[in-house]
Length: 336
Picture 1 (tube, one colour):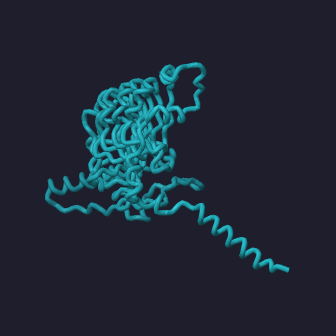
Picture 2 (cartoon, rainbow, N blue to C red):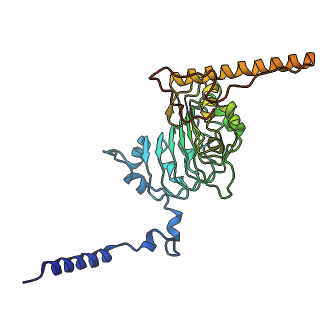
């Protein structure tokens, strides 16, 4: 009688051999080779690709008439590249999903004059040329591409959402923003994500009045550099974690609360009314103490006699603002 253990071992060996026979070699999928190099250029956007990318019913319409009626086109993850010249076939499209492809150039995008939403993240785009005539564009997603400069938005005067995180240009440098483009979209842009772009200076972004801003994982060293960008009564949500100042000065949260009167969320954490009130009262107390000290110094300088100015209250002693019993401001991580 056959041994059950031997039977299982034999069956396992057969399955392993079958699996090896059907397995795609690792080198053909993960490691670039000379044979696979041409595929890296991508395939052109053809009528066939467009046809197989839509579920819309063509009915009795001719191919040309059907193309003219298409308003949404989903061509993501089709290895399309290096450009989008085939979009001339579907001029009525106003929502385009073309992420996860091999697109290098936006050539062809100018054919979509009605375009309102454009999703191009995870491609190889090096230039935004082609967007100049898209005056109806409202959402533009270009994250994880190879842009060195954000420009060509002079006509995009209805743009509300701009997502350009984690650019990897050929030469590593801080992402630049064209002043003319920023000025053109400053009155309409609400959401900006420019995380992971090695930013050090935010001067180019000061004209914007945003409700949501992501500046995480950049190289901003001083929290004071944020003031011009986050000040006002518009900003609701901001993400700042991963910057040098966030590691060196954990009090940056209080600075944001003081500058942004309408702020509701910092680094994904809600700003509670109690926290806002606490920060403002603490700031007022510090201002009064500093004013008092300055007054004493001026009087001492006037009459020439030294005065006992007293010491600033030490941590854990003297008059302090404390939450009422049972209250929590979520400030336990702060170090004042």
